[in-house]
Length: 265
Image (cartoon, rainbow, N blue to C red; front, side, top):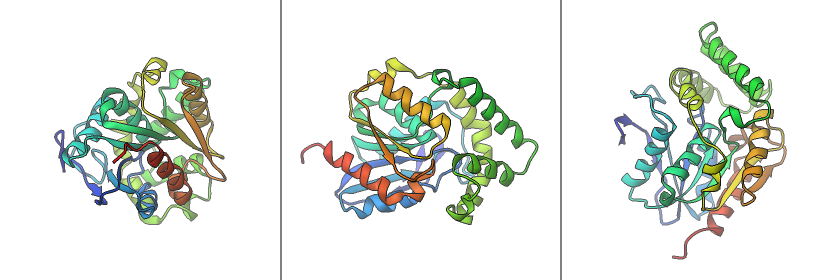
């Protein structure tokens, strides 16, 4: 699909179910595939997902977070979906937040899977900033697979090869350039805070892992401090990779939220 001067690969389960848009995180274009399958298997949802700009070696023009949200909105428009429930994971959760802020009429409800917030809002901002800068710097000194291994060890643990299929690891390594050259600068330039969150009127839940990293724990806490309306749901036993490793459990949480807040037919 041609979206805002970029070619995006779009998956649409079709059907008459409640429309749900999935927005994947950085380095993880296929990490939501198991979740999408589990969501469609509930028999209640029409599941739409897409590979964000540049992923899969597609040509792209770098955009800011508002541009990423505009991509998501245009995918829905071209599919004839006026309003959808949205689940975004990691950076995809940040894009989902931006989408809900700039195009609220497009979003029926918002499920945020450990989204990132601008680092300035987190208690350990300096620590997280140093870690991300080290990651970007390592890209110029190590192989893509070595850098990816460091990221997944941080997010999940050293046993990540036992839960991430080799083909997904290869795809993620190939997409490392997109993060370093386009997505990280866009994220660092993103301005989004308390007032933007408090302006959102659609139902919102934050889905997070029991064994997540410090940065994600702080983000979940900050969102809860900013808005008492936000529901928090924990996936027991999981790490940041929960949409893939705990796909069925995550699907149950997301599907129930969508059904609960679906408009009468």
